[in-house]
Length: 114
Image 1 (tube, rainbow, N blue to C red):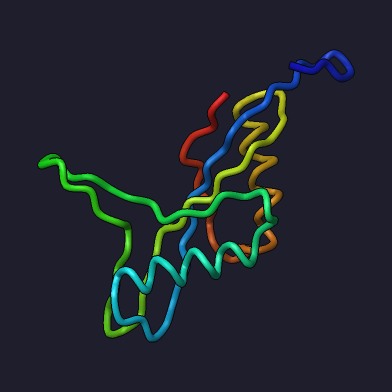
Image 2 (image 1 turned 90 degrees about the horizontal axis):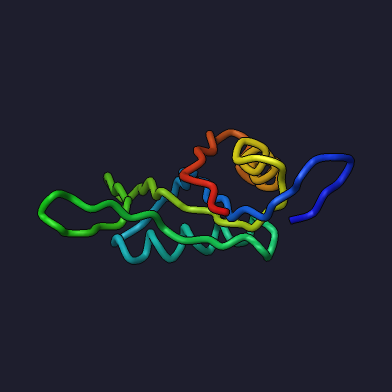
């Protein structure tokens, strides 16, 4: 923990969720691989990129991918370590890092971790 001008700064790991739209996709695996590749090219090298997953009450886990007529919508997670004074500040810093890459998409904070 660092103190700058009376503010206590902590290290947070923030995960943001954003959509990636793809065309001409044949399978869920292709959509996941292409979405991760596209997102990783847009963000700085220190941002972790992965496809989000959801689980149903029966215990089955699935990737968050929707394919309709060869077009795909993939939910991508962007994780990064930031230094901030609060949870909200950490989310603001993380959004400012990746907002240029995903300027038209809403970046939803999944959770900041200390």
